[in-house]
Image 1 (cartoon, rainbow, N blue to C red):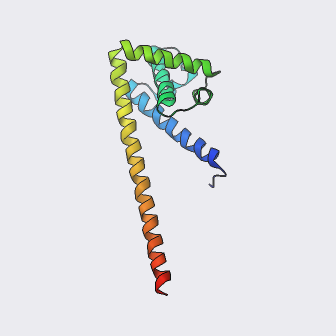
Image 2: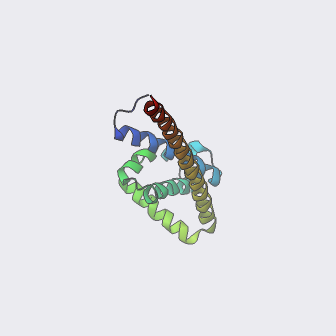
Image 3: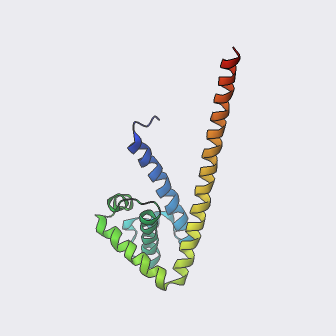
Length: 140
């Protein structure tokens, strides 16, 4: 599949990150990954999981509020603002929530570092091949 422009690449990258983030959050919150959606109900664990995803996407990934609302299935950006506000309150008063958040962030950091290392290795391999090709051209 060939990507036409930068926005297509960003969209694909964002969807992958979003899916991975939701997976980590659900694992740490001990809920099924289908329960993070807006239509899953208002059980505390489900709401906190959604709030955490919104806050992480807003804070660490700098997504726009309307983009987060679209990814989460919210009606508009104000739901995202409310989720972020509730996340901040939970971070201040719920020790279990803070522990879960720290676990998710640690896993996401490890995952990101792994992706960066793999990307660097691919680039080095490509550069090494180009050097070999250039050396062949120069010796001719």
